[in-house]
Image (cartoon, rainbow, N blue to C red; front, side, top):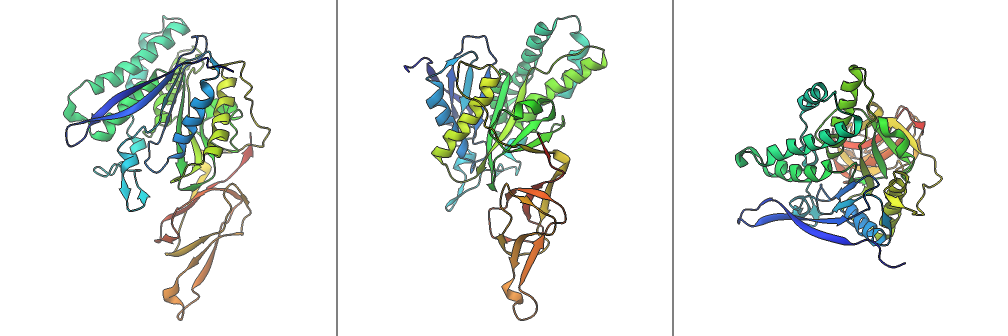
Length: 373
């Protein structure tokens, strides 16, 4: 099949570095015919989480041969500072080294905007109300970007520039990875049905609380607007869906697996009407879910050297070994090898990247109280 969709590139300035030169990110755009929802996809907000760049590459390789109903914007290297934060052979880039803040916790949300909008726009039909609210969200971000420069730190400025792009879309996908991780999906609970169209076995259902992340910055305003209007006796379906897509482990890319991940995303986009006559459909797999309150962090009860035993994505029965901790300095004084277990059934989703841990290090994260979607 010949090329049917043109890809354009723009480099957007998101700040300045210490020598005064601009800090830029590449933005790729594909135009649809305007009949379907628009899409924004970004990757590599955390420096070591590089697999999303490979997925964006594989998406572009396929999208340029497809007919699109909706516009698609793709941003690899969303955080050019984070992906260059190196320490020896390792990439850091999860936290701003100056402020210590998680790069993915700096997005903006003004909850007062929702309440004011709900009060002042009751006279509009749904289509006009949605259009006006989307513009209000963009204007809110613009007001921060165009305000006094001394009020924005580096991470906030990067986040706001990305958020402005995302607010223009109807679908937002933020591509991440864990330390050592299985694939999983952060899904707002109102969009549970859509999770069935990604080829991802593990789904974390999250509430409408805003904690600074990209997905929340996009779905929380619309969710809260729908709730506010419902309180006035008006039902508004939530027109925006936003997900964090966890693609596996950090510090590596796998182009073959990236093609599978791209097909998973295309299956979802096909379901949402972004693609025209595309063959992408969801895999016939069992999808397991849990609510955010049941996403359980297991912290190291003692310090030592860890052998991780729980298979990622595997179903763990209560009492089964999940790790061994070796403490060689105690070889002659006590049992140097101790086995850790979990007291409930669970699915192991991710574990700490290093075998060397202090007491209190987050060893694992588990799904508990699991159900099938």
